[in-house]
Image 1 (cartoon, helix red, strand yellow):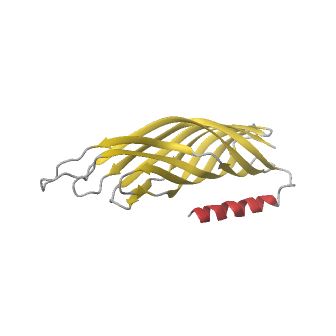
Image 2: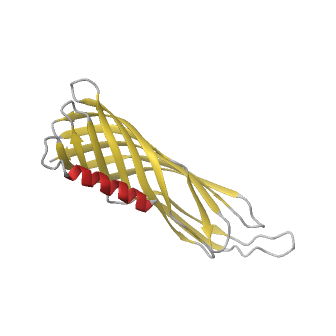
Image 3: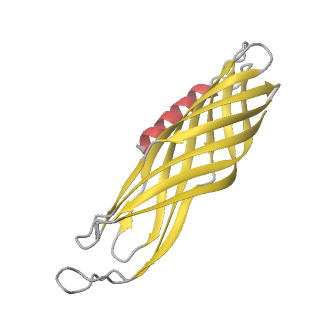
Length: 216
């Protein structure tokens, strides 16, 4: 899916290149701050342990993006933004000890486990729909990103997953400057472990952010 996302983004940028000298085309940078909310559940897949472990995160984040957009005479805008820095959506650790099994032995499950997840290559295709002639607009966006995991596990590892999401917001344009408040919600993240057990993780993430952008 990541190749598909890259192809779509490349096609859109190639299309916009033809408008580079046209009125209404601009590139720029955005600065953002917000709160990310994430909650996830890890399900053990071993015969001796089928329990679930859940955790929630509420974290502030700061970031920046680069964008290109075409602005029509009536203010209607189509744009594409890319965040070049990773956003952490959760991290944690736990220490397990061996537990007795029904056969009288003990499950070899002793040790400290650590894991973290990041959102990488967040691309957003968006539109600004004017609300009157005073610069206010409604924001609608479609997110594409990759969730990468880093973990320290004894016998297995989690992979990465491509996800999508949507964005809704309200903004105001003043010349080549914009300020907007938006809400983003991503699809459920489902990742299964490989290499040693059948553990799985299911997580959800959404965010509320304030963004300032400057076009050139």
